[in-house]
Amino acid sequence: MKQKYIVTLTSTERNQIQEIANDHTISNTIRKRANILLLADTTPGKPMPQAEIAKRCSTSTITVYNTLKSYTTHDPAHTLKFKRTKTTNPPIITGDKEAQIIALACNQPPQGFARWTIRLLTQKTIELNILETVSRETIRNTLKKRNFALT
Image (tube, rainbow, N blue to C red):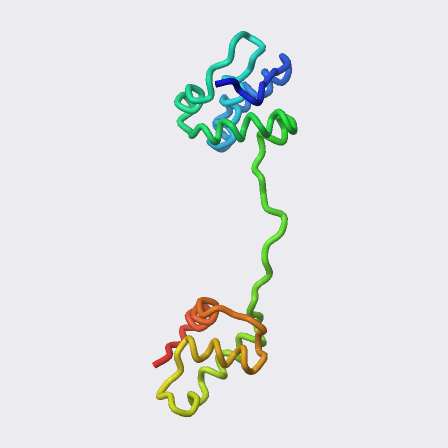
């Protein structure tokens, strides 16, 4: 199978990557990526197949493929660092909404019911416009976080 992404390292890049691969203070993930790049390098001769690189580095062929793709589309610095997510989803239930849900659960259950259930709380939360949409799991986690039992 012909490799889609070809790695050609300069001597300075190769030396820097070898230092990273031999540095035991760096995480195993980054060291594996460095070893993948060194084994896939075409400068000294014919590179190993991706399956052989994966076996030698104790990783999957997908990891080898993604590492080589990252190197050829970006650069070694981008490949040899952790990718952190830049944004996180804000919490759906904030303090005041959480207080409203807890207060609702402390009140008497609706007519015809002996006690509150997670489904009833979810429906009532949407009905009272505390939240536009909410899942049962979100309501359950909110109650669990406050050690509130529906008994």
